[in-house]
Image (tube, rainbow, N blue to C red; front, side, top):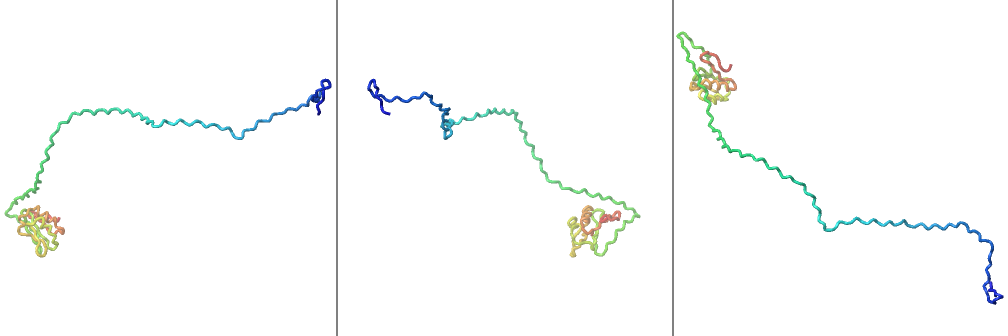
Length: 204
């Protein structure tokens, strides 16, 4: 629009704007836009680190347990020394000596007849010892074991045929040795006879 001149003043004035007597139409409820959401979650600041122990700090020693002092041992009076007893004397063993054989003295009567002794077979030998025993070797039973010679060497020996025979020195042997020699024979080849009774003492 062109400027208009005021007739009174002759000065050009700007045109008067057109006005309306009608109120402007309501614009309605305009809601302001919501603020935009943050693109990333809020950053939580990290918690401060735990304080570090001071460097070059000597370790604290653990308290030592209280140790009770040991009780003193009871005082025992010294035992008086006893001299050791002397060792028993060692004596040589005493040899065992068999008791002497009691030889009864026979009573000889005028009409008494001595008991008969069985006759020896051919090859058998016999003899009487220092006591009442008479021994006889049965040659057929002897095997030459020589056990009788070991027990009574004054009464027996082995001949050339390795058969035991009675020696003349049998009279120096005791009745005990003669009986032991007869009992040692494994084949019972030695008989022992009591000259007082005529009975066979061994073998029974």
